[in-house]
Amino acid sequence: MISKGELKSIHFNKAGTTPAIYPFNLPFFKTRYELDIHPQVTFLIGENGTGKSTLLEAIAVASGFNPEGGSINFNFGTRESHSDLHRHLATHRGTHKHTDGYFLRSESFFNVATEIERLDTDENGNRLEGAGIIEAYGGVSLHEQSHGESFWAVFMKRFRGNGFYILDEPEAALSPSRQMAMLIRMNELIDKQSQFIIATHSPILIAYPNSLIYEFGKQGVQEKSYKETDLFQTYQDFFKNPDYLVGHLLKE
Image 1 (tube, rainbow, N blue to C red):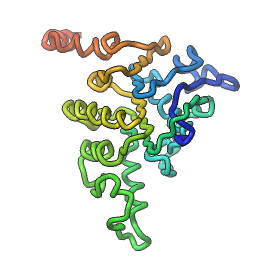
Image 2 (cartoon, rainbow, N blue to C red):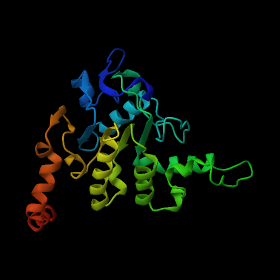
Image 3 (tube, one colour):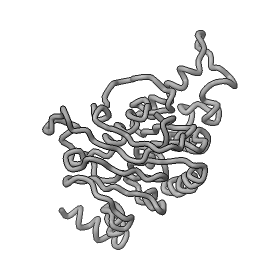
């Protein structure tokens, strides 16, 4: 739980697991026993299917968050689809107690927005004006905004600082310029003693300085510097000569 302090490392308990069955067949679980977590920002990157979102979800559930997302107080289920990995995850925490926290995942954010509307409605189906949960998000229904604007409302309004924030592919709803603005917002929140763990495909977000980047792949997980990552190098190669690369891909 958040009240136990900032996350310093996670440890994998492999006792009682079946290596051939998901999620225990994922390369990072088979090859590592622990991962350190940065006190400010830890990024999980890599190709689809390498387990970064599965691990992020397990960290969130082991920290007391609802598998579909939301704050530590959310407790609802649309469809139970999370893995058992959290049962084999031990967390090592420090002494700094965060007072805020949020698990934001792009794939189930619609469900969180729907739950907020349900909680903000009285027994007659009327919205609770001025005292509902949505007030913490700026007072406008998340369903009445674009996907990007509703995400942005979470970053700008709901995140208060001194928080433990777990984000799964936040760039899915954000334009490149908004991703750059997110770096500014992250820095503001980090200055207020916040900690982030982010799974992402964004070369913009992982540029945040002095962060810890884990790259997930078929061989397991490796710590990388920004420019060493496949993510950075892929984008760099593309923008060097996009016409040539696209032409080559289409010929293939």
